[in-house]
Length: 276
Ligand code: ATR
Image 1 (tube, protein in one colour):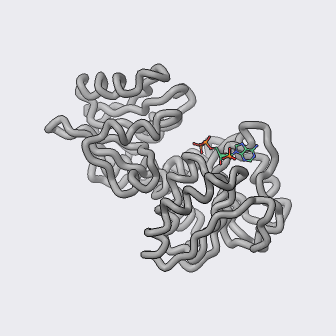
Image 2: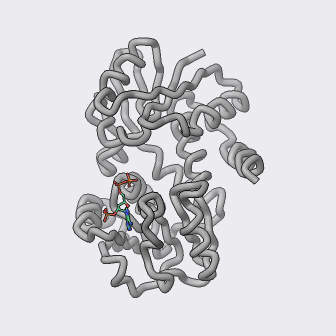
């Protein structure tokens, strides 16, 4: 079997091994997919050791996504925009290709699994850290008409908008940065990319941003997403957690590595059923 892994710190909680194992089972691909815990200062060494063992590729999770592009021989445009990579591919000539499938996964989950079109929509992206940076490019490419990036620290939202301004112009999309407390517009899709619930903070935006029936998406899943999703439901929005994004970003990585698109919607349904 060809060897893959997810590398992070911590990594024990990662559901990627189970997802990739199920993809392999359903597609008949022969892969082994492991967890690799690497020390905080040992990411580069961990990647090199894994490649030397014959690893064919690895997913990268916290806190190494921004360090990953620096190890690559070549980076996709998505990685250059996001400044972060979640998927490394070790090629036969020893080179390393870095890609970022997080944004593709988010867009696939919103459009295919939730059935919500992004074309022509007004989108609010809350947060301006690594999670937000990883998805802004693909949201623009999905045809959103207007994307507002709102973040507690406004300067970080402004920097993210600045780094994506050329792509926004190309897509004829409006892109702006806002202070979350000063938001007055209403949106069709609101995406929570903050770590607010983990840090014990409240909901990072006023409920007035939600159009009736708006999709309120939290990029996290499980207890970390619950506060945001309850708030969204209470205010007439349709809540959705990030489990589908997790499965779809894995599917994009699997496709990149194996050349086969796994039945991700089926695997997501199985995971949703086993969670209830
Ligand atoms: P990640 O890689 O998960 O995005 P990060 O880069 O640390 O992690 O970014 C965390 C995001 O959550 C930031 O947008 C952060 O806002 P600041 O840039 O102002 O720090 C946001 N965040 C974290 N705790 C928050 C809270 N209590 N309220 C609002 N936003 C919060």
